[in-house]
Length: 387
Ligand SMILES: *Cc1c(COP(=O)(O)O)cnc(C)c1O
Image (cartoon, rainbow, N blue to C red; front, top):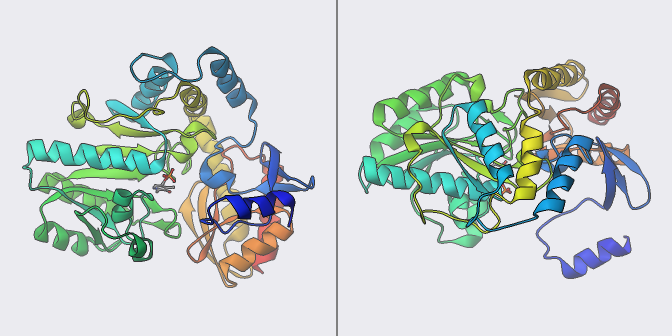
């Protein structure tokens, strides 16, 4: 173990089981460790480094802003935040943006917006939020309550009340909860990331949209992991022809800086008034400059590139020895393997490729612009590790 790793164990709270690799630099889809060894990074810091390490355009945008103003409070106006908010609204048809710093906070904002709106429009007793089993919405006490995985809850009781969990792809379970509770909103990921790259059925998503419409329930889509081009569209909900009332997003949006956003539709555009929500770091101009650089590049051409890379990965992995199937969309993909996923990821690491797991799958979240020749090498290593 290197000295950095020893000091980490001594001084940093032990919440993470890390791989024995210390990343010191990177360029594009290549990460370099402290011994100078190179790895192809198929995880991009969990879908955060949207265009890889040290992308020129992103670096230039961030660096230029860094030299102007690194931070001011939300008591003053800044241009990068406005520019990014306008871009997000133009690309989605949403009406307002509230910026925060992490996915959990974006979901907190979404939950607050939903509860306030329904208290004013449906009645103060309509507070319950339906989420899905195996969902993941964050680590704060409220977003943990939203997260439909009991094992995350056990040690931290009591959690925020008012969350109930439906079975994925079982519309009757949603209907039963709607009948039983006073429901403000239904919140879901179109593809459950941490839950194992689980695709929600298009019919199930359409069913949720129908219930939301009929029952005057808000639809909240968590695009923290699936957003910002990851699935081959700006946001994953766009594959299903639905119009969410609220969208939360984070991870890739800042291209490597802590940035997140809660997008509000026209219906909810007035839900947050002065003092209804706030954050010190939120809308930080350097992060937003990074965000503008990322979001402005999510063009149709870029999305076609995501689809092309996705098709390539699937063509090599589907039916390959040791591979039971591939889930997900675009460049959020889950590989069901015959060997334990952890063993496959370990083998990939030994052979110079960084992959993630999600539940019992190997999860891939490569850079949206990973060069094809680099991707080919990585996929060959993954295939070998699965066999
Ligand atoms: C990662 C993630 C979160 C939490 O984001 P943080 O930035 O870690 O707070 C929430 N929802 C989904 C779907 C995620 O993948």
